Image (tube, rainbow, N blue to C red; front, top):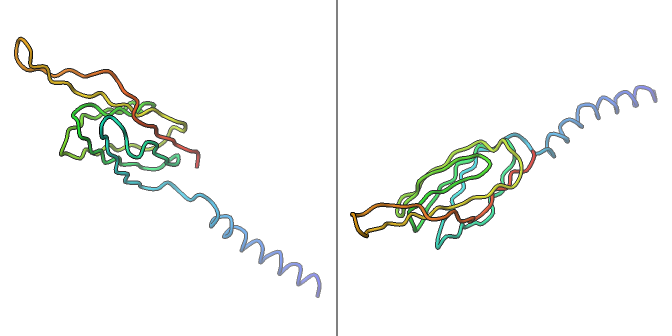
Length: 131
């Protein structure tokens, strides 16, 4: 009788434990839409946190024209005011990565109007944590 109870208990644990572990685990990759604002050369929110494997779409809104650059993933997008730009990537590399902005300056001196990129400014960070 004790042997039957012991075997029944062990079988019950064998069925329940994987369910508990799966419920407590981090789960699989997520699809994330994150809205960010570049305003007065600052990123809001300043630090973006995702997990490895997540499929991320950054929806970038800015008050100045320029170039948005996600280091570590080597992704760059031209951005401009009054136009939200999507930047898609899979967060496969873990770590803390700089997000920089190169404001665009319009020069109207001398020989007509032309655009130049200003120096790179660090405006925030992407943190990708292991799953």
